[in-house]
Image (cartoon, rainbow over all chains, first blue to last red; front, side):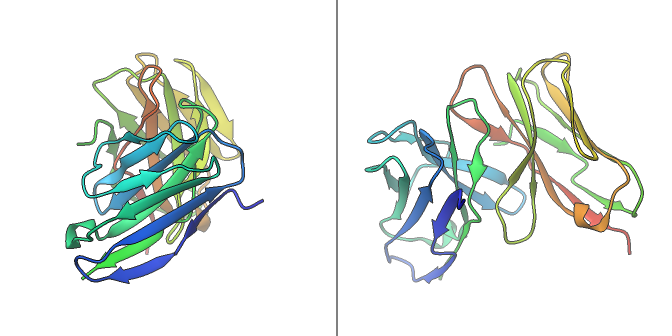
Length: 112
Length: 111
């Protein structure tokens, strides 16, 4: 039982490059989330989705886009990476908006 | 910014000790969750609390949902080396889709 799987686990980008982070869950959860984790800041919500085909902005959405074309996948895109986006990115999912969220192991992204 | 204040920010434990940490807010929360994060991994759910006053245990862990609905605490009894890590509290306000996280309590082993 894989739970929430994130790919890639590590990536180094140059400023201005683009990339997509993939999150896949096999728990048939409706809700999916993307967070970033920075030292001393805890987890901050970037975007989330309440179901296939839906997306919504979180606390820190600027510079990111997301898509939820399939229920099991939630993609996070960086169109033009900036050093301020160096962080650890976590995906999570839950059955409903008030049920506990289950997290992936994170993607460590460095932007030079 | 963060709306959940966790304390302490860090603590040292000695094997066998009981430890306690708490989470407070000026806002009312409908659920409280406690997660543990090990290095290089994502947060793992430890305990979920859904009612004011609720006291729930998971092995050596016990957590309580404060009566005012503005705080929660987590206790670890008879700590062991694998208890080291970062513990996060999180909560849902009202019937929202968003989870608010505290800044974490880092648990370390006494040298």
